Image 1 (cartoon, rainbow, N blue to C red):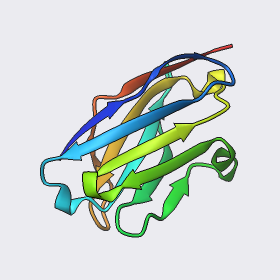
Image 2: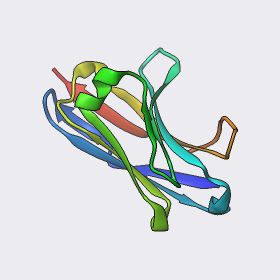
Image 3: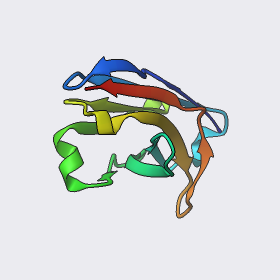
Length: 118
């Protein structure tokens, strides 16, 4: 499975960005697509995920739902992360990841940089 992210950028606090991730290759095995963030000098952390069959979503924190929305386009094996009201703490490299059924995320994209200026 190959994953390619796009949509990152450099924005002001309060702005919005929409990240996209397209999967290719042996996509039939993908059960979940997720987003992770790695801030400078910190470990990569989970942000949100969605199942490709039922569209069930999971967010790292309930409060994140107020600003972030994860969605998918099944036919294209594409997942989006709509990020609104961005904060400087949202800065980092955002990675897309894929997981098979009952498995951890084990396929990763190259990441896309998001920088939020205060």
